[in-house]
Length: 263
Image 1: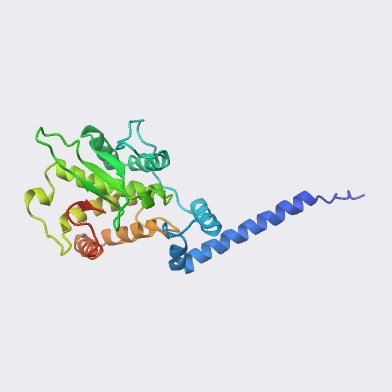
Image 2 (image 1 turned 90 degrees about the vertical axis):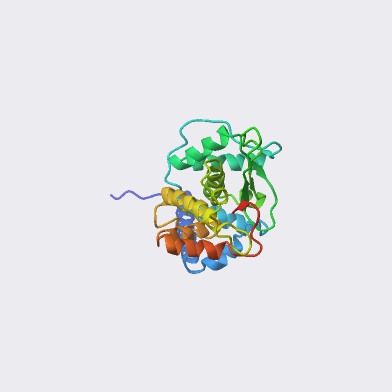
């Protein structure tokens, strides 16, 4: 005699929920692949965080690739300038933790601590951030700082924030080590005042950090700031000449910050 199976409505509900989740996931991946330009606009950090925007970001964060980096080697004080709000400090801390996941990132992080270079939050009209390096009469660099725009911090992409910190810390490093073209007076200056060689060096550091985090194929489902970093890596892998041409084009906008190393 065959046993009669009892109808279990909970199992049916769970099965339907699983099917709906898998369908939504498939649709999200398909849309991200075919309509990434539209998604970039929807998910742009300057847009209001509607329910749809928040849900879309959460889905992409869930499906997206995580950096393949080890945890930072040890705890350390964070180089914050005075007055940073707690929410921004928490996000910056996540960026610093990822930054320190590579040998170069750790070295740059320690350089900021050693020379008392702090990170501040500053609203910027065009750039995501910039660095200001100045040596005082007593040989100290403690008046130097890195500024990051709050929208870049609040975008919720700690990997992108880590890459920016690597970029700006590279400017500081080149100033302290006296290898900057502004020190050796060998800069190719763009029409907007940007020293090309400095930006090539800083963007190269940014690209190599991104490769360490995601490999040469870049980050999958990159539709916001991270897409720009994928494109930066593509240019970097094409060789020095192609990479320099890309940076020249990227940094040639008249709105780009002249007078300071900026990103």
